[in-house]
Amino acid sequence: MKQITSILFVCLLILTGCKGNAQKEKNSAENIDTSQGTEIHIRYAKGFKVTDFGTHRLVDVRDPLDESTLTYHYALVARGTKPEGIPDHYTVIETPVERVICMTALQMSNFIKLEQTDKIAGINSTRFLFNEKIKQQLKENRTSRIGIEGNFDNEVILSINPDIILVSPFKKGGYDAIRNLGFPLVTFLGYKESSPLGQAEWIKFTAMLLGIEEQANRQFDKIEKRYNELKSLAATASPRPKVLSGEMHGGNWYVVGGKSYLAHLFEDAGGDYFMQNDNESGGFYVDFESVYSQGANADFWRIVNSFDGEFTYQALEQTDPRYADFKAFKEKQVVYCSLRNKPFYENTPVEPEVVLADLIKALHPELLPDHTPVYYEVLK
Image (cartoon, rainbow, N blue to C red; front, side):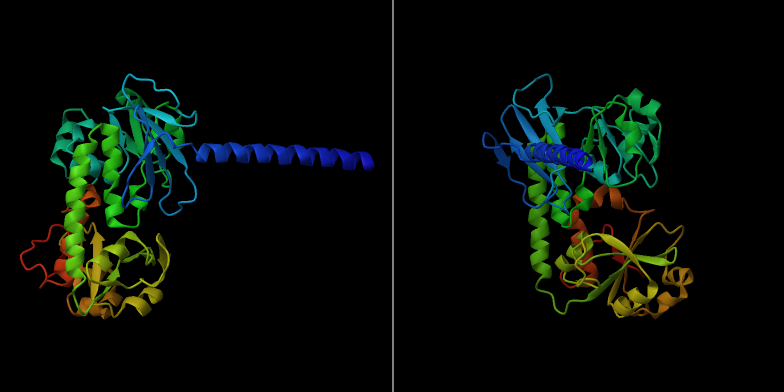
């Protein structure tokens, strides 16, 4: 019995030692000495950190909603160079990149804004694609379709031979299969930023990959200036209307919390999101009764969908007769954006100032009497 106890004790010491070493390795990986580098100031985005060492840049990408852990690490180096001092666990990316695969419209929006669509060599979907340059690239086979999420065409990806593949690892996308192809997967988490300017600031990360940082900085400065001007204008508005958002799908209503990107937009537009007291920054499903109890008396109702045909109040009521009981429905205050007619996902991630102007025009039309809506407008 004593012999068995001794063996178990020794095993426990070994396991504890292994765990301790693994933790030390993790800590050393997450706490790189940046004293020899200069941190590049990122004003709003929480999801990436950049340290410039002159010969290279270290970029740490993390979940913006969980800043406690740095998860993905990239070393950006000038093409053809091999700088010393790059930590082993950093994926080396030669810049500027020339051939990129984008997995989401949000990623594409950065290239569109930077006028670098010619660098998009592959995309995973063309549903509701609006950009004429990318459409032309598809016709001329300069951009290829790589299949749908979870079922990518590896042969097409190999033929593209991309420098990098931009991915959103927290989404279901079958990335394990393409990871084995040997191309660098670069994590892009702009969609998880909870502030509009934070999401737009990911344009700087994209620009670093493309080698056009100064251009991106100038563009972002203009976005920031206009956004903050509009935000200050809306802050003077009174009263502040209550805003409902979303629709029923499959028996449930998808909502985002009071700390979310959408909630911040409504707040900056001079409105109060109907879930503003919820502390979540992500989304979740609730039943109709829960939405009705909190949002039936909302002054405005924001809807974004891909309705096939003309979207009217009659069409909205036909999808669910209970909608007619909402105050915003009765008073014709539905703020609508059609995904079939507007390049919403292609453009809005890097045009928060335009989206904000649209919402201010809807909630407080007297503040922007000359603004012509681009994405959102009050449904007639």
